[in-house]
Length: 179
Image (cartoon, rainbow, N blue to C red):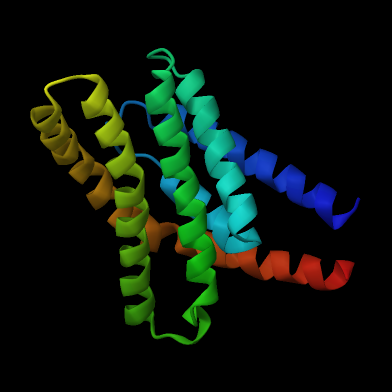
């Protein structure tokens, strides 16, 4: 199995995780693991795989969720917003995170959670408010609901980063062995 084939399999697995874990958290309004999974994909394999996981995973969830498919414009905004979390993960991997103190790493993870959440909800809330008028009342009320996701991501990212760190060590070992 080549490195390219392994990467495609990993992208497919993480995209499926986005979909399955969205089902698992469906009753927790605006609390989900999508942002962290896409962030982790970008962190582990770079910006292109992270973006791919965001696009495919959110595309699956937007099209096949139990509440029905999203409006095509909202779906596009959701897919783009989720894909941006992969870019944040790739950028986070490039900072000197391995040599920072635990307090500084915690602060970086909270900042990454905030950035992922804001980059997702600004385009989604904008498109949603544009489609369902009046714009400003809809946009503001959507932004208030987004705060739930923001706070939950500020907890999820630092809490689950140990798993991503473990995968990072394993992936680096696989990459060194295959070259």
